[in-house]
Length: 454
Image (cartoon, rainbow, N blue to C red; front, top):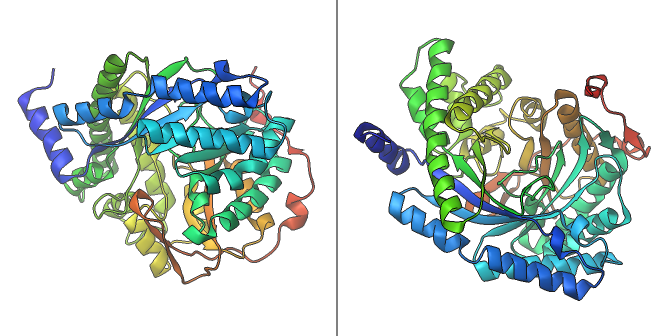
């Protein structure tokens, strides 16, 4: 039971400090939609999603009204489509029909995004995997709500460099296919290493094959709440700082737990996990960068940034796991550039570079996220960026990801506007030296020695 003090405290977090439940994501298994007939696959997918998710949005809105907790997004994740469509699809265009079905179903039930147009190729690619990957540019150009992800490596298997090289090409083609919208398709495409099965956040959400037939995962976010709490700890030592972050993360996670349990009960779908992620928005006061600056940095990117982020990420996780028995997903601190006003300012001032962001990904919850780069960046350079991030994830046994946007027609110094929660971003410079001979060698980078733990 919450006492009156805790109720007032939570209300202040919501009203003044931008605490919100960022997403309720309904994960749906589509494995029972497999069929050798493509029309049958599409029909089964549409029927299952619209049946199971028909009340998702209204339920979220009911909870929002009754408890006064903002629930920003209602989303769906599905089984990786490369697995679902493998028996029916004979060419990449066949997979695009499934993407359109997903988009139609998402529009019908009213969710803002549906994730799972995905392939898991950390060790190798099947014919279906490769066809789905090659269909991504067309699929993202032809849909509004579909999000795509590809897992190219893991600590157990190493890095599939053939897939890495291909994803460099696919990102460039996606940018070209959506260039009329400032290459927005790339904002709905993420490349992973060690992708989790239960991530509720887009663009990387998919419903893992180890999951139940349907499950509710909730992502909760509160960078503004953490920043306000740390303002009260100015001048204190690291012990006080860490305790403040942990206690705040605990309170934030309890809000998510409440929403998850209510959504699970009302939809009669099992509760999966709470993803406690400090996911920023472009709104002033809702920034991870500002938290790091409150900790003591003049600007994000200054010496000490990686250490401050490592401490923040760890304390967020420690506070979260005490608040819920089922913390999962990508829990920690996100560092997307375009979605965080403090990050944008740091880039604009020259304090923050891609190289420093890469160092920060060693200790954040994901990786290089929502970074605009020049539209003429070679696909092999993008593949090299992916390989670097995958290597960080593989060696450190953590999830890493790349969501870069080569904005066609834009160069360093330009700004690109994505809108909404995606924000805007200055186009960042990329190292001009080539890695083509490296990324085109072919084959697989082996798993690290510490992967052998059987």
